[in-house]
Length: 255
Image (tube, rainbow, N blue to C red; front, side, top):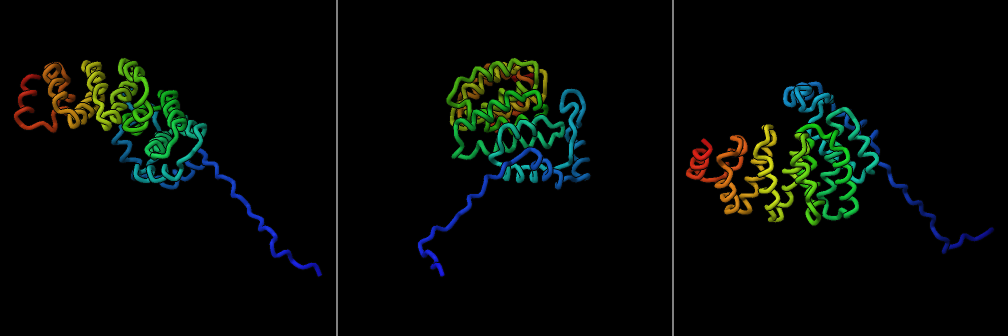
């Protein structure tokens, strides 16, 4: 008999990395489909009216379920993310942006991965056709990439004829504000003062209010200069956290 070698090495197998695909994501997303939720979403977004979500198809997925699924697909290759963005179903595209948003908030993310996300978002901006998709992509992801880089692109987007590119411009400053940098928020807000879209007025008022939390004096200087010509919705959003006396003063200036 041949004795067993007591020092024989154990053979170990290395598991192959699982490829996260757009097809897998969509298949899992479908399991959350709800006709009740679909009716709610269609009423909320008013799909197909004007340029807001025109041509969108909704599946009927709760956003909480979509966000949870997005976490599970962290690490999806950009080529697969782009397939999701190419999809006509609104929640599928929202899933792609949510995956990028959640991964971009991870402190361990590499600069190259950030760039991949930013480039994909900008390259596919024509597929980002409603306020929720812009908000998912811009409250952290785009701004965190641009923070230590030139920001001329935001001024170009602020002058765009496309409402969603203009919304991207102002909301991308959210990350800057969190770092205490409010300059671009106030400058881009000036470019949007004559915007005709209420969704831009709301977004700009939101960011101005947030910037005011960081720099109250600069906000008051801005209001003294522009309150009289600001759209009413933008002004109301901007002054929401001011005391009653200041609110009344700036509303009178507007009148």
